[in-house]
Image (cartoon, rainbow, N blue to C red; front, side, top):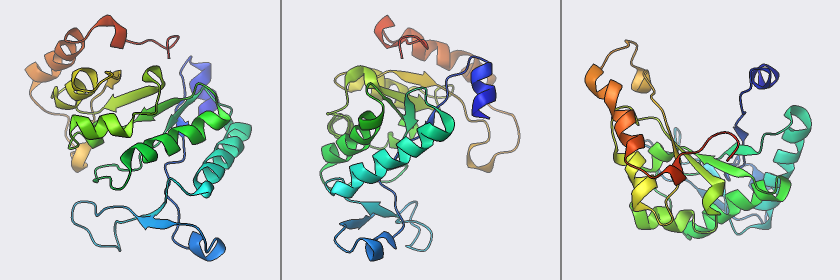
Length: 212
């Protein structure tokens, strides 16, 4: 798949390490500081509350970098990695340390790496919390994805106008979100919202492949 994508001129986004680990890691590394993620949509431990490695634990960078090294050997790299520690959940602890740990593991293997984050999944966080999360990530090394950009401006504007510094966002639309099977919606909104979002920000936040 990756080979075909690149043959078509596409830039691949490969997984980064966001701290998720099996709880059994504690048996192999009894000194590892293990945590649990927050509950997702009210589900109990059986269906959510995944195991997380504390961002201050030395194993975080060691595992994250080792994973990316092996992945790079197998698939190469275009320098863009996805990593979502808190997808649709509330982050706790030292939130700046979490963001720094995720990015540092990427940059250790790929200097100048771009962290590709699902911006829409953090829309319930306020701007100050997001600023703290990304505080140690260089301005041009973070790229958000907004899967609701064609229907709303909330996540898009939060990243491009409310954060300091503002962060670039890719506008997207997920037609089948929530198990929806029909291709339907408010056609006027779908035809105009993305354009309105893009026109609302300055050219510095409009990126192309070369600038990333």
